[in-house]
Length: 387
Ligand SMILES: *Cc1c(COP(=O)(O)O)cnc(C)c1O
Image 1 (cartoon, rainbow, N blue to C red):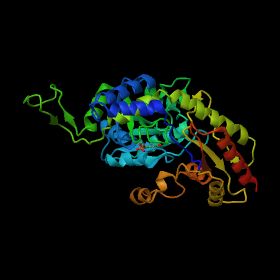
Image 2 (image 1 turned 120 degrees about the vertical axis):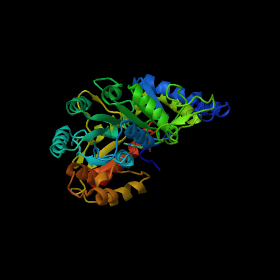
Image 3 (image 1 turned 135 degrees about the vertical axis):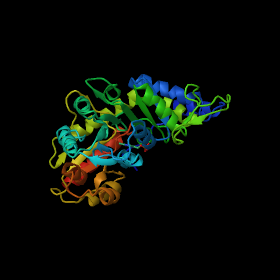
Image 4 (image 1 turned 90 degrees about the vertical axis):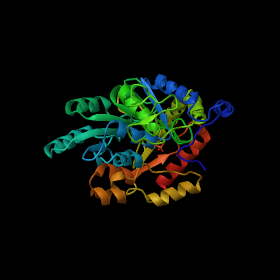
């Protein structure tokens, strides 16, 4: 079966993990810091904090930025659940802004309208989580200027966009957002099994995140109320166990060395899909706006199922019969039963995302996808569009 995403593990990855399994540290050892240093270097941040998964990273970002009761945090409905769930974890209220129909990322015009609406209602928008959907960066230049104009913090949910660029710069994420978060789940660009990280250029945020990652504990003598001895620690704020293990970080460091190669491969696959599909009727290929570099975590193809002779369920079934497991990213978060019930969202609130959901299929894209397998995918899609 060819699925939409898959990890690539080679002997250098395995050797890196095995050497750590044979060392003295399985967790809270030097490989975590080494991975964090590697992340800082690659993504250009001053600080990095590796954690147990991307969702934990989002949660810690919200805690570090002091989200809580009465705060509103905005994001787009076209993301994985955790982007919005993390807002709820902190006690803040999630709200959404629809996507731009070309980049599929948060629509900047609608965003400013929403900000003004909240100002009118005398409510504070605390932060915006920009999701670089599929690997296409948000319009971070405009996001940054809005954040300065209205004093709103920015988080980049960068889970899809490792290695993406803006004006040819791979450090675009940390340049524009207060905190950048990533996930290293096996379907993402690089993997640690489960895993994630936060990056920031703000020392205060970095310190806070590191403490909250491990129960809120501190041994920093400047912060201690008492000086009982070398065994002594204190807790001033409630934290979590969101740590990652050393052997996972060993895998992360080995994978990060291969990220450039992964991105080149993903871009090559995307280019071939786009070439084959761009002139066909009833489908829309993902576009890359000028000055943006797409990292292609996903290849989201839109199919107008109203215009072809089969519906999405039948299309999925025919593809599966050909050995291809498609996916859909995503059912809009605001239409999840919990979000409808708790926050009153309803069908029609964010029509671009809702329409996108009806049409979208995620095609297989991962570094080890062979030319042959991609050919099979392309032929099966074209056949099922036309039959
Ligand atoms: C994968 C993903 C997450 C969550 O990451 P986990 O490591 O699975 O917790 C959050 N946001 C987006 C956009 C993702 O793709």
